[in-house]
Every structure is written in structure tokens, then in C-alpha cells.
Image 1 (cartoon, one colour):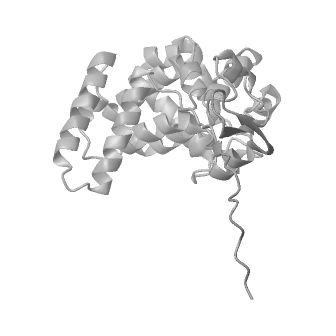
Image 2 (cartoon, helix red, strand yellow; image 1 turned 180 degrees about the vertical axis):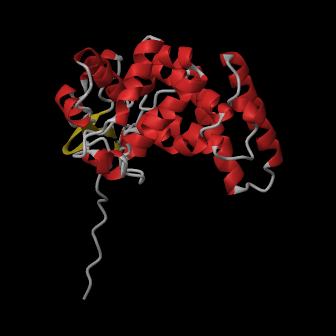
Length: 286
């Protein structure tokens, strides 16, 4: 998704010094800010709050020293009138959850600016940004952010899933809570089942151990029948009356050939018994 470039940032923040333009561009790209800066006021407020309760962690997260990040965040007090309406828009944008998951998360957590929520969000963001290549490669960005957001805003979920700085402890807590829910979910309650599913997603997010999904096309009976010749048959060696239908030429994809698969192994032999026509004359019907 497109994010603002330096020319856009200059229009939004006319008083921004040149030496902060590249860090600003990098930060807005990291959080997937929309080109029109919609909703950035809430997102900025969330980042500013996280910085206020954990300056060292947030500075490290955005790869800036504390002084530079503090100066950068203070620039947003002078927004250009051209962008202010979109910048201060209080409505969540369409498609953000799937296309801009981190931006969406920061926007939503504007309403959860507490020390506990801030610590949980910071811990999640640290893991996400550090391992974003693996998460993106498995196409797990949206599901990971969704699991965290829905579980954290669900007050029935034990806070120990989030309030820890130990990766192993966090994973263990998530696992234990999921197992408790599974034991209690005797009546297959849909809401509990959803929580269990989100806990699975969150555990995989912290473990980075998703299984790669493969889709295998299914061959229909009609397709199998069409793979055999209707005109050519071959006699089975050693038999006088047993024949088999010849298989039409099959094209295999290169990765299947490289794996040692042959063109005929997925097709059952189609046997034909050839018999002589009876010599008894057919009855004539009047």
C-alpha cells in the first residue's frame, strides 16, 4: 500500500526541518500511513502515549534517538489546513484492517491508552516489526493483528497473555489459557471457540511457526475418463483376452517431474476383457 513521500510530508508539516523529513517518511511507511493522512491524529496520539510511558523502547522501535523522536512527534502541532480535515478524521478507514493492519491497530488503541494496554501494545509491535519479513512471507499480518486486537479488547481473556516481557512466558501463558478454555468449552460455545482460535493465532505469531498451506487440485471422474484413449487398447502381456485402455499423453509440471512423479501413477489401469461374439443366432422378432 502507498504511504506518504517527502513531498506529501512537506505539505502536511510546512515547518518540518529538512533533517527530519527522511525519519518522518520512514516512520509513516513503517506504520502504513495512508497517503491522505486520514486518521493520523489518533494514531499520532497513540504513538505519543507509548513514547511517554516507554521512551527507550519506542525510540528503538522507530530507530531514532529519544531526542529526535520527541522533536519529530512535536511537529504535529502545526498541521497544514489543507490536510487537517482528513488528519483529524475520527472514523476508521475502509480496508485498513486487511491492508494497513498496524495503522488500524494504532488507531483503535487510541481508546485504550492505559499503562497496561500501552505495555501490551509495545510488546506486540516490537515482535511484529522485528519479524515482519517472516510474518509477511506467511501472509499472517492481518490474522496476527486481529487476534491481538480482539483478545486484548475481550475483558474475559486473562491479561497474562499480554503483560510480560518474556517471550517464552507469554507463549506459555497463551497456551495454558487456551487449554483451560478448551476444557471448559463442553457445549461448543461459538464465542469461546472464537477465543480459542484467536489464541492459536497469537501463539503462532509469537512462535513464528505457521505451517505452509498447500492447495492441491482435485481431479474429477470425468477428467480421469478423458485421460484414456477411446480408440487404442493394449493387450496385457501373458493374457489372451485381457486388454487395457491406453493412457493419453499427460503433461506434468516441472516441480512434479523434479519430485520424481510419473505421468501414469495417478491413473488406475482400465481393464477390458475381450470376448468372442456368441455364435448362436439372435432371435428374430415379428
